[in-house]
Length: 337
Image (cartoon, rainbow, N blue to C red; front, side, top):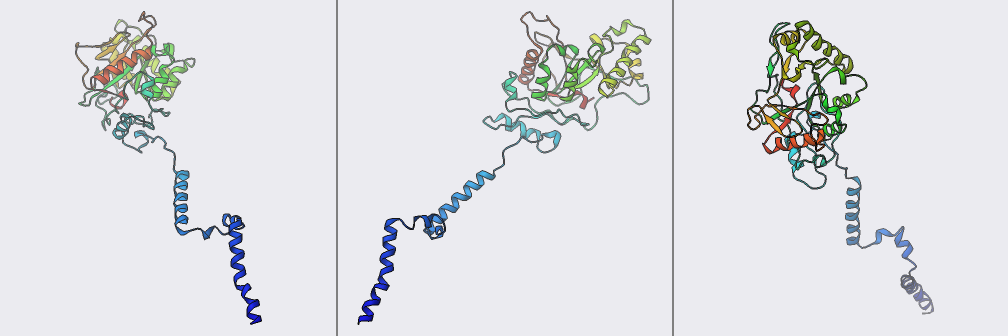
């Protein structure tokens, strides 16, 4: 009896000590460290679920703009629809790919169109034809065709500018931000190394083409002088930008047979006129009507054209609004000619 009396406290003593320790909080540090697995199973499951959610947020990739049609990683139409939807993270619309590695460079911030005064992004241009729809005929000196529009059923028009674009230094930023396909026809006076504006435009995807050396009225010149005006500027632009122009826009839109003969021997593929034009006031169509598929539009801007002080970027914004309102978008002329 005496032995059992002495052993009984040994069985009950630890329980009392455990209860006292729990009451006094002695085991709390252990639960926070090595004994965490003794937590209730339901609580453990909830903790694991919380950990998964936390890790998924930590590992979630940030959204980055797709490379665009030029990079081949997304469809242009899908990109435009995404841009129209509105809301944060909207993808900016891209135009159809510029061929031969001339896709405009540089990203475009979401809502760039609003920055430039547009209420909606430009719709993407349709895919250009596999073959050029206009070009010189066979033979080394076949006369180049003269075009004021492109034969297409697509609701697309083409924007051409002369060397007056250097009067608005923000124009290059506009071309970059909107990835606006434009063709700029230059004379020698603005094609030199001191005019970096056109070099910037070219890096943003603008086509740089020929408008002769001195902007003379070509039909008033004999063949030899016309040849010098056209070929001389071909050489200057080749030396300046590394590429020989394929398109010629004769000054004032005037030409004769000598112009075409000289252009052919200078390597010009197409002589480009226009069927609609815009100055500082409004869009004017040759037949007084609305835009038609394939129209070539010439934007001309000179200092003092508008007493209100309208800039080239302001004029271009109004032009783009008109183009959108009539259901058109802008394509790259060099992809069609």
